[in-house]
Image 1 (cartoon, rainbow over the protein chains, first blue to last red):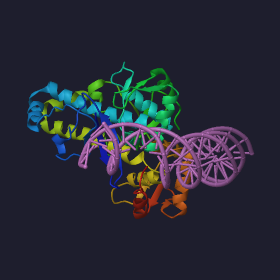
Image 2: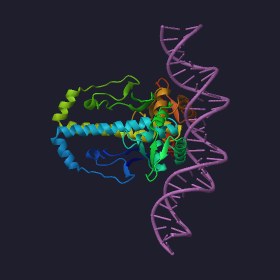
Image 3: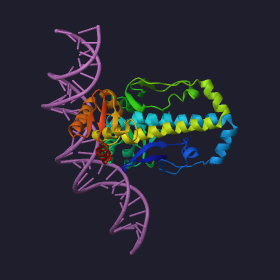
Length: 170
Length: 170
DNA sequence: CGGCGTGTTGACAACAATCAAAACTTGTGG
DNA sequence: CCACAAGTTTTGATTGTTGTCAACACGCCG
């Protein structure tokens, strides 16, 4: 997992979203030659680099790749909007529920991989203390369970969390 | 101004961002043929429509346009990230200050155009009551001034608001 | 005039931040 | 292998901010 970090003008830092297998990054390099936010790996990652020249040649010669590239842009934007819409509204426990659902290893899995409290706080816009409290409440309620050995992995009660995540926001 | 509205699965609604002169919308139509969020005009707007076929022909024939198109995607994503980073952190009055600065008519103007309290609330993730309170506090402090006649237009004290907007978040 | 949409204000309750301390983990060097 | 230091998480007490509920003001239009 890779966190996409934005450093605001005022020194504030916020995680914009978490990138996972299949996600693309730095596509803007083909345009402006400077990155606008940091990417920091949260665990061991395998990355595949495509040199700009190759990208440009393919872009020139292959309409199919062009289409694919557009599609990636779209996907990224769509993802960004989803994070915005889902993780910035509602009570702390609602946002946490949504994050847990979002960070599942796959759409059918009930195993969710989280990260440090500090990073959780930065994603959900809350302090590490509230993050900790919310997680522990969910643990006590049996809606999530720590997987031991798994580094900050949780087994989650999907149905329960989906209900939580639908609390009205604002 | 056009508000880009996201309708979440749970019925919640949230404004993702506000589009203004020069912004582009519905670029994804060239890919997936379905829109994922509503666009609603907040005042009279002039729009320019480009048929997909034209877009595709130009995309095929003109490398320059392709570059331009990519650039637009990039711009949109960048904008989305900026909204996320700036308007979802910190106290209500900090977020309001940032919105006021962002909604200026130009980079040098000190006139900021807002919209209904309901929409402000939906952008900043707060209730209309808090939005009203914050605005009135800023008015009383003389940091913003209502422009009479101007429909929800404010003359803002840029320096003061910039200072506000730099309050530590979280 | 009377109703409707929008904005304002107050009192109160709920939620989350802050401050502080302790428990627990992990890695390091003796 | 233990002791210790540094980092991370947990928990408690308290304060501050924001949401909720309710009432009212104001302008607009039929």
